[in-house]
Image (tube, rainbow, N blue to C red; front, side, top):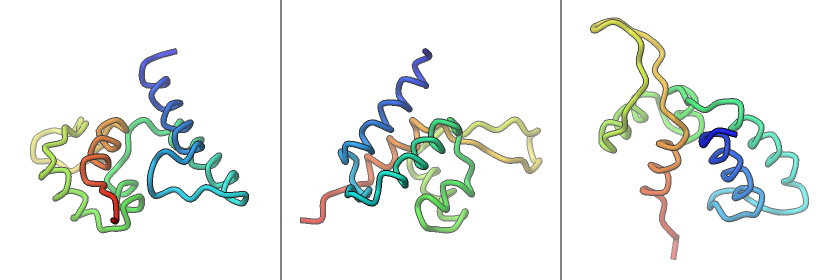
Length: 104
């Protein structure tokens, strides 16, 4: 098992255990957690559209947040050309941990 797969499985376990903030844990949430774990396992690289949906903001805001965080983005396009860009799930989790805080 690769290091990426191990980290994704660890993330799924943390979500199931309720250790990551922002995920409700209760009797009716196990199906949602299973779906989320399957989706996270399947996608090691997140697109800007995926991140916009995940964070509840526009793609432009995602771009600004990633630029502010200094994240490295996977981009196979030629200079000056448009393409779909991807961000590794570990970088996404690091940014979320950095910007997350407790309410009280």
